[in-house]
Image 1: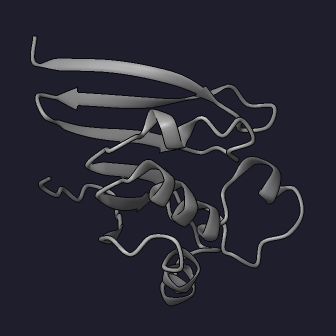
Image 2: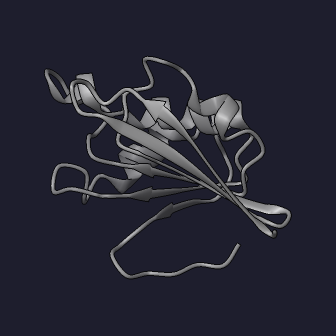
Length: 127
């Protein structure tokens, strides 16, 4: 009775994908994962979430096919702002994004200035 799960389909190119919203009492976490936001569903789905978890698989300068299935950091910032997320957690970091944290922050901060966490496997945070 204190937990509610909901999903929405997200566009990840030809790969089926969904985002999850986990509501625990008054707090929520949205696991958006890999998507390109063509359907623009996440801002409303993640409205007022405490934590927006998004895959950070490409840098702002990415070109080609990767942009068809993944978000640029600037898009992450706009989605976080539009959804009024309290914090953003960047997961699924890849070699092409590791070491570019300052560039990523610079691309996100014009839209979203809240807490930004670069996730590593097996880490835990409190809300």
